[in-house]
Amino acid sequence: MRNKNKTHEPKVHVVKRDALPTAYAWGIRLLSIVIALVVCAVVTMLLTHQNPISVYGTMIKGAFGSPRRIWNMLQSLAMLLCISLAITPAFKMRFWNIGAEGQVLIGGLATAACMILLGGKIPNALLIIVMIIASIAAGALWAFIPAVFKAKFNTNETLFTLMMNYVAIQLVSYFAMLWENPKGSGTIGIINQAGREGWMPTIGQYDYLLNIIVVLIITVVMYVYLKYSKHGYEIAVVGESENTARYIGINVKKVIIRTMLLSGAVCGIAGLLLVSGTNHTITTTIAGGRGFTAIMVSWLAKFNPIIMIFTSFLLVFFEKGAGEISTVYGLNESFADIITGIVLFFIIGSEFFINYKIQFHHSKEVK
Image 1 (cartoon, one colour):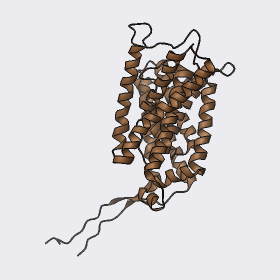
Image 2 (cartoon, rainbow, N blue to C red):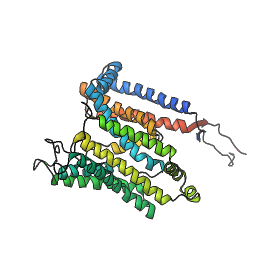
Image 3 (cartoon, helix red, strand yellow):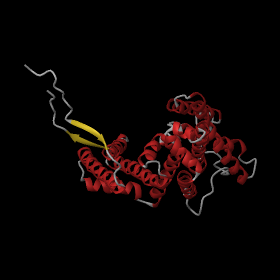
Image 4 (cartoon, rainbow, N blue to C red):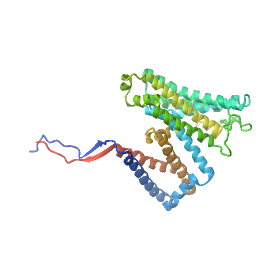
């Protein structure tokens, strides 16, 4: 007869790793990127029937093929980085702010309102100051609402911030109809195109250089704030354990509200830069999904603002390069998303092997 006291252990165990040395961890990440590029090359070759090397050359050309393309890529990088920096304090605190898209939209809407209602009525320098204040206040307010509900009533911040994105979209849609130009178009069009009231000034001949400089300053300030300030320490402690934070005397509710105000304020600045410094109009799609892409940028960089520069660059490069492949080889726009998705799949998957290891065991019998 069979022994009924047999115990069967799984042959495969997933075990939490001890902390890997930084060099090994980044080695795994770089290897994942190399594998992703190989897979992308195979997929591209199957779809285009072209030499993968020439296809990757096309990708590089799409990102760096001309000075204009380089500046467009740097502008896109700066905007993605700015929004990523905005959500990082909240994410480090384990407050899942999925509402960056809406906070950027509201900041941009406040900027557009100032440009439309005050343009030509007050000096341009004063107008820009008012726009800066309005966009920061609007973004901070949009983040303050879910923060208060989380701090006071422990609501689900993920759903709350996500739903506020849709409220922001509808508000922008309403004002786009209210301020539409020309009438009947359903869009605002270029704001103050003749006099350029409220447009961010250019530095030399470069339209986007001011945006890039502003984001670089925010990057440095955010790095110092999170790593060396008392507020940054409190954010880290609350993120590790709210109970521990309370035990050592940190006012958790205050930290939640303060951190979300900061997060929304930086999103407001991103909205300002997009409306006043780049597009000179406001639409429901002006954030371009960056509020969600920024989550990956921040997470992959382990909430380090300096490393976020490189993760932002990686995503923007693949976006621009894959878009060029789509154009040159007559593929539809979804191809760029496929390539980006493959790369992200391998990069995110590499985190599993950094944090866990697989062990194989022989089954044992207990008699």
